[in-house]
Length: 323
Ligand code: SF4
Ligand code: MG
Image (cartoon, rainbow, N blue to C red; front, side):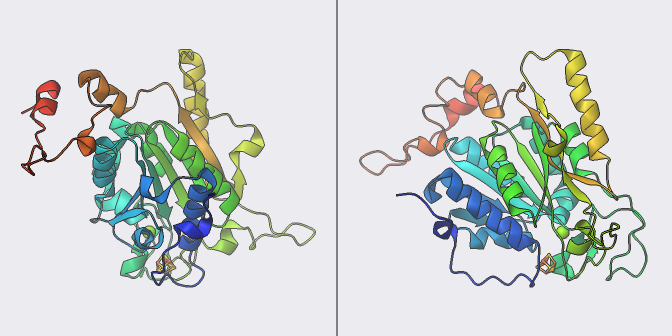
């Protein structure tokens, strides 16, 4: 029987503020899972701490609301323990790029096959709107007594230098586009990072839905000139293929950096980079541990017929040559 969006909804009361961009991201995740026909018991969704992290309560798959900044450690562990799972991590910009920045960088180095959706609103919404790591220098949202005194992190550039092999940006109120991005992220073999611009109508009164939509600037016909535009509409090709020459690969990285730095009057969304030439962590592990694919940790018997525990990962560690 075909799965429907309704099959991924829980009856947990949603207490996000009216008009929050989180709703668009939540709907996009549920629509993507339904569209891909991924059975709920084969999907694990992990979240950090913050408004966005409540997503784990609202999607009817295996869900775990974890610790502040630690979501990628859980996602990594789950995927390595059971490579057959579709693993999705979610969280806000404060969670992922503030306290979680160390994990963000080191997860990128591994290239584990998970999809990380970052809800990026420039503020710590759950704790009353302090400046988050992505808020730009000099921007003063309504709960700040002074303009932001720090530079904002550029999530795309950080993801590139960390080693993420799929890097994208979506917009919470362009759901059909975001569904396409999340599907591509899940289908990608390796760590997929999707930064989603997510208006927070309660605390970020600068980067609002109207601002992204360009309602503050009208053309001669009185129509808004949107800031957000799609990379694919410009013929942008993000793919680095196996065997691609150095010059061509460098050209891809140059166009990536140019687009990653674009902000303000024009804000690109879409797939910035898709690197198909880098092995995944699971592939590297399988090369060292011949039986990893057939019997990863989650598929090993934990007791014998007499109910005596048999869990023993000694052979894994011996193969990995760690103690
Ligand atoms: Fe959404 Fe902001 Fe409200 Fe949090 S505080 S639920 S991010 S609108
Ligand atoms: Mg935030």
